[in-house]
Image (tube, rainbow, N blue to C red; front, top):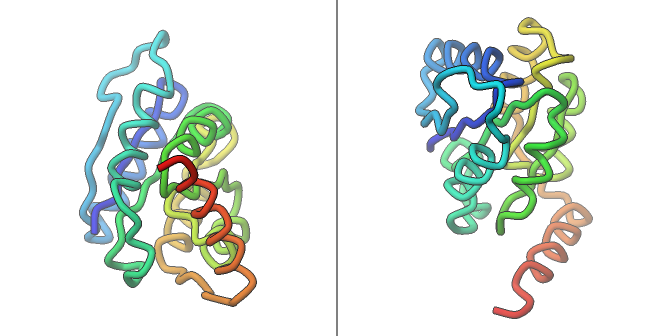
Length: 158
């Protein structure tokens, strides 16, 4: 299982801190950039490639620990979510605290989370990422039904 990371200039610092924690916790990851600060970079240039790695196929039948995941960071978390959700098989959620991170997994089976580089402290981000990584999808019938409707819509026109 690999965690794919992406950010823009507004999320670079927090993304780099997430990398420190992933190393500390023993997770495999791939940093999709950016690698240096560039105030003129654009979040789609990093969010879309990371999301494509996560969504390359639907691995939602696997245990969470064995699935590809993504963590994206930009100033608000909104921009990277816009980009990520254009990619098939992605269920991305902007999270702001431990409760929203847990909900994203339990109810939405989110395979990508986004953090705000402007409004999320490192202390909070560490807790958020840890909870998200450790929470399984509930597999409650109503949540599965809703996700399947999204999958069906994604498959239209194939």
